[in-house]
Length: 255
Ligand code: F6P
Image (cartoon, rainbow, N blue to C red; front, top):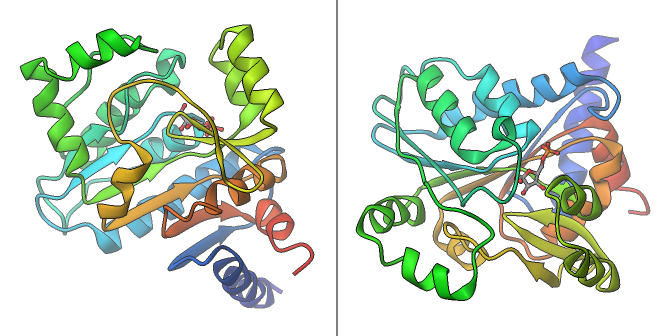
């Protein structure tokens, strides 16, 4: 029955929470690899959670990707948390327009009745341009807001899928493959143990910044992302996971 299913998820949520050492886990039914509405359900669950934790004048940094786009799609006005500011977590990372953090950030802010600031930087950046760009006053301003964000909402992807989606140069794909990367988040590629194999050079949140963030929410589901999710959490930088049943069942296999 429906009640049994709900109870079953509580149990599954508890197991995933222990496995990945998290503060909070939400699991929605189904597999987002197979059905696109499951992704929208994760989006809704994320919006619900954000409404619980957001306070007036909070700053929220968001990444790109289809899952976080679904969070933006499902956003509704934040009544208890007025005047929230939305910023993109990092520079573009080579995604198509609809998957870019800037696009998603602006949409989410509008639906939430909040405000937003965007980042206009080319990427990936050479070391030299990176150093110049982060000193640019208009960029510096937004970067400060991003690094001071109290809440971060981000996606996690399969390493090779992401490298290909971003039209990554072959030599970098080689590095990613040789390093046996399985997961990707914030432009970082991780192997199964959670070690960083490659990092895309761009402005915005760096992994080490997350240690100072109150609430880091990962939203990722689908059986195909289970390995990616567990590799990312080996580093233990996010404290909340919103996922689906299929990914969750894979995640607790063998425990
Ligand atoms: O490129 C932004 C990003 O958040 C990546 O860090 C992540 O791997 C990917 O998008 C997830 O995309 P999707 O939700 O479409 O699988």
